[in-house]
Length: 90
Image 1 (cartoon, rainbow, N blue to C red):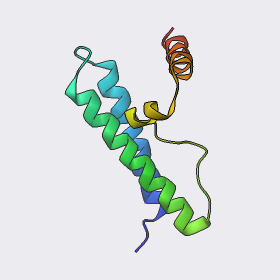
Image 2 (cartoon, one colour):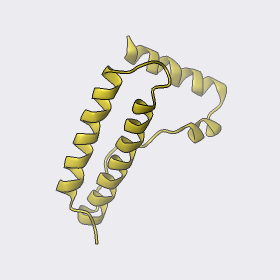
Image 3 (cartoon, helix red, strand yellow):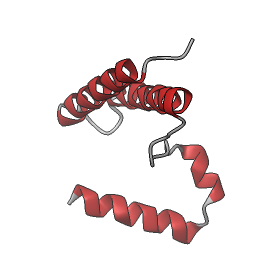
Image 4 (cartoon, rainbow, N blue to C red):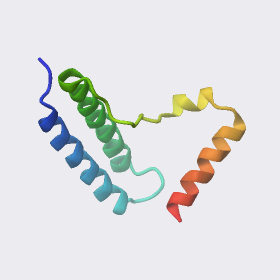
């Protein structure tokens, strides 16, 4: 049985809010709460994207980035992504 896209959207928005809360309250570089919120956000996004596809034949324009994606990039591409992330942080 497919997930209702509206329910999946609500869960995705809640995961976004939770991720923001823990990032804003981060306790160090390796805060396990941030990692847990990141994973929950990625899972909520995947569920929402699947629900859209199953119900409407549509997807979002986003992809989940993970460390395994680094294996497909060369050093210049990784440096470019790091620079983009630094620009966002500023």
